[in-house]
Image (cartoon, rainbow, N blue to C red; front, side, top):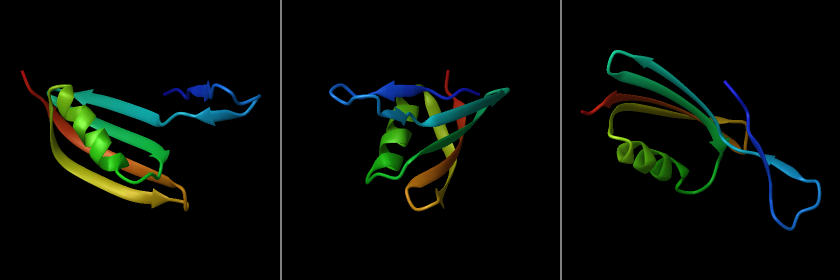
Length: 80
């Protein structure tokens, strides 16, 4: 598990953490946990990116974490 930090161009020393992503693999199943900022359409974007990785989403759970963040849990299967 790791946390990435990025600086926006044009901003001084202000740092903004990127989404935290955790992945676990068991046989052909993948468990993903994403902790990210709550923006309109973020879940659709996450699911779209997962589909591009040849993963078939079988279950999704989304819960607010505070007022500005989301905790997204996804179970997907690897397609060959």
